[in-house]
Length: 182
Image 1 (cartoon, helix red, strand yellow):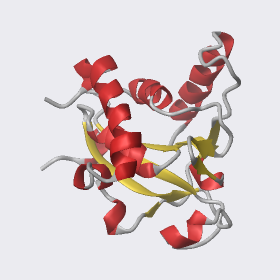
Image 2 (cartoon, rainbow, N blue to C red):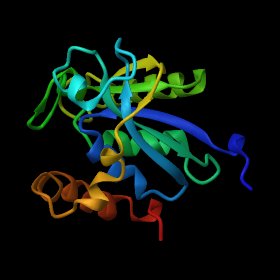
Image 3 (tube, one colour):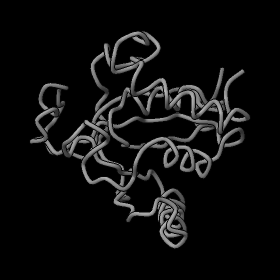
Image 4 (tube, rainbow, N blue to C red):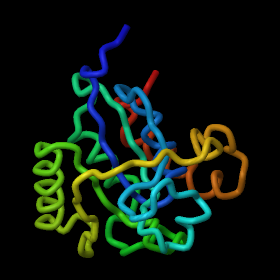
């Protein structure tokens, strides 16, 4: 039996949770990825409620990972490499506060590393535009409805998946092949 304290949790919002979930499920050292909602005011929000942006929630993922296999820093690197952290409340055609770029830290080490990483990318002008990703303390995470979980792997041929998510997976496989599950 695995002890829960062997794992850590990272919580990222990087646009559509179908996209971010699909990426992080591929990584060696990632035990579990759950799609859900965080950072809003409504208790037990539904997908329909958060879609209008009025609840204040972000579509996000909660990653349970083994830090002896993949570090929080490596997760940050992949997070920034697989979404656009320069567009406010938007990822491609997905527009609204629910699609914002935000890191919800679960401890002070995650906060510090996130802030330092953003500062370094800003200094190096990595994206050629200002980074709008915010760093906030983790709050109540609400698991999304069952049909959102593992969405990409169950719907690869659906238009959104094949045109938006598959290229992200292909980039991940090309650039981070050494970090993928075998």
